[in-house]
Length: 81
Image (tube, rainbow, N blue to C red; front, side):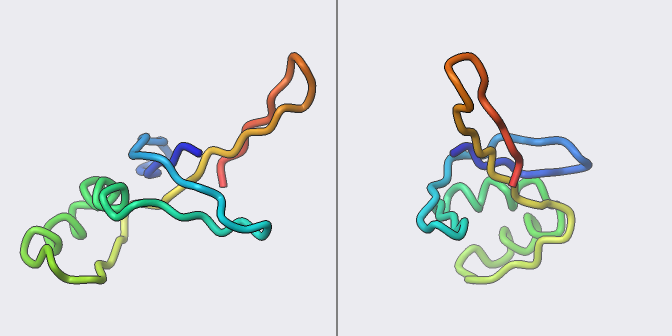
């Protein structure tokens, strides 16, 4: 599923993700999360100063997955999780 960074109510595509459970747990790659960090000035500065750090505070970016399902032959439902 497409994974987007949400900045100022805008969806910015940053990579893909995978649904790995029936309850909605989603997985993605580290490089995709780093793309999201680029959209947050505070996190980007912290990441540049210590790229090996395992945790970063993200204040200005949210993550959203675009989930879609076929309703019938002509309609598809799309939701932002």
